[in-house]
Image (cartoon, rainbow, N blue to C red):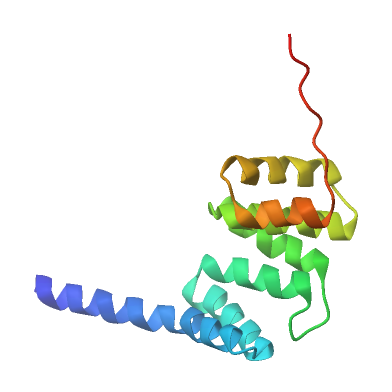
Length: 137
């Protein structure tokens, strides 16, 4: 009985992961419209946490679609809330591109820099963000 339950659990896990996996294959091959559809299905049917991150990036950069920074912010916030550290970098960029919440963008970048995330370092360079130095005593 335990083996049957284990087998069923594994099969369900494999089936649920297929929408996200398909989305990643489409994304890596530059087929962003199908990737977007697969990621949306992964969220809706599979409750995939990682799909929020990928959809956020697609909307942020307008990969295969028109950029939609508001939607990017929604998906990237969900990804950050689920613990995706890289998403903090992209969420900060969404705020900067949308010209909203610059203070929050800076806080997110600082958090990412503390974790030595290359994505945050890149955003700091691209947007030429300067951090104030703390005064020494």
